[in-house]
Image (spheres, rainbow, N blue to C red):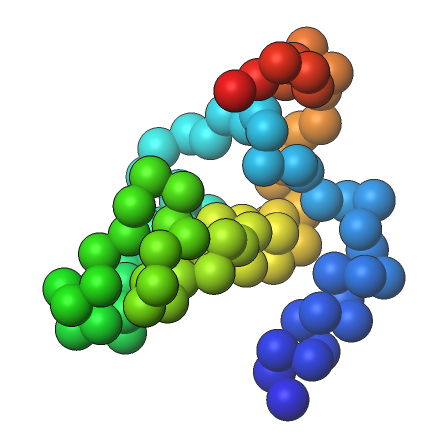
Length: 101
């Protein structure tokens, strides 16, 4: 149920989200603490299976369980909504959108 509510909020407020291509965060804030703690909670859940099936460079090998968005895309956008009053948007740090690999 909670994931459904979060997904609906993200869809409704997509224009307030920052893309995962470029951002700068001050250290030791509530935002970064929540981000770091949620990452560790997820990695703790994955730990046993990751020790049996470590990922390759693309994370597409058999047995690897972490989805592409699970440790960034599913954590960062909800936090952007939670802390939207403290986020500053700027085009000055836009990433290169071609030939980035």
